[in-house]
Image (cartoon, rainbow, N blue to C red; front, top):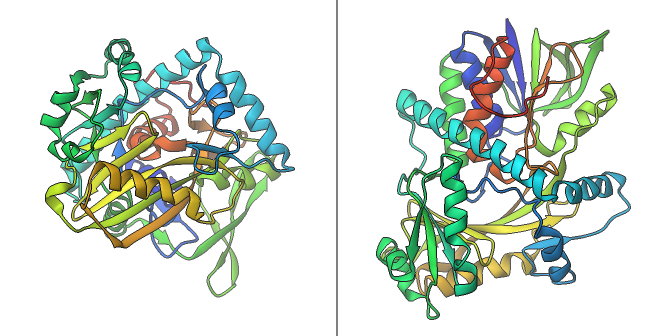
Amino acid sequence: MHVMVLGAGVTGVTTAWFLQQAGFEVSLVDRQPGAGRETSFANGGQISISHPEPWANPAAPWLALRWLGREDAPLKIRPAFDPAQWRWATSFLHECLPWRTRRNTEAIAALALFSGERLRAVREKTGIEYEQRTAGILHLFHTAREFAHAPARASTLRKLGIPVEVRSGPECLALEPALAGRPDGIAGGLYAPDDESGNAQRFTEALAARLGEMGVRLHWNTEIRQLAVSGSRIEGVNVRDAMGRKGMLSADAFVVCLGSYSGRLLRPLGQRVPIYPVKGYSITAALAAPERAPVVSLTDESRRVVCSRLGDRLRVAGTAELAGFDTTIRPERIKPLLEWARAHFPGAIDEAQVTPWAGLRPATPSNLPLIGRSHAENLWLNTGHGTLGWTLACGSAAALTLLIQGEKPPVAFPFQR
């Protein structure tokens, strides 16, 4: 059986990998000249199993109101005459209800734990290197008021099967001495020892190269235009190459892994998916003083910023912006990330060698990705992972492969049926 995976970000490439390992004939299609060139390109770098809480939670509407009008706010909404944006926002508010937040958190945690296991298996089997670090993730709290909630959160995470440790301010500094440069100190933190970090783009590229060596057909520079439908089945994909030549690629089954662009492909089929692009920003900076830079991956819970050490560079990422499909890099959104790096690790980065980036996270209102069947008989979905694409990629791909094989994944998750 030939399965064609549409989209070669980290979700698409891992999907192709697990399908190939299960014995399927596989091909991979993407408009870019290689794998991991869009949303997976410069994300925060974290495998953050310890952060299953969705954006949609009871506190979110009040935070959004508090940040309204601030250009440097962690969440910036740019209202548009776009029905999709308003539908998504309305659904997001519904998902903020406490019982829905609990349900979504449990589902994300289950998939994240499974995904962590699958990632380790891929790494062991392939031996690929992607600047990975297995030193865990340290979640930081800057004020005593915020840190006071840490024990309850740790208890919730442990009940979900996620190991975490409450650490005092001095214990955080002992774990990551580079934090000693911050003048106002750290109130405390939560340490997740089983979490990881790494370069998602490098992982995706290396795994795609391995797939090519194993006989998977890689269609680069191939724009996916439209699905060719015959009755209740998909016959093929109408494409256009870099020279403008049009054609159709055929297979027995297809998997949509197109992130924020999934809805555009599915809409002509009469299937509306609740995915909206949420722009995220990052900076990647060369290190001027490596000894002053952190080794442990960090999540600043007070500032909504994450930080990962990637070899001789530091990746700092954060902020969310609802602005449609606009990928413009706005200086006022990059500035807080640079200031955060300066404040926490004085002198660590070379500010003359800072690369800014913006990418579109494919977010559902619930933060639950869409994994499973579509409306068409031989069309499958693995999309809508929001900020957790890197965290959930291997688990989502392994689960979808089982579903295509007619088996039930060992995960308590609401798969598409």
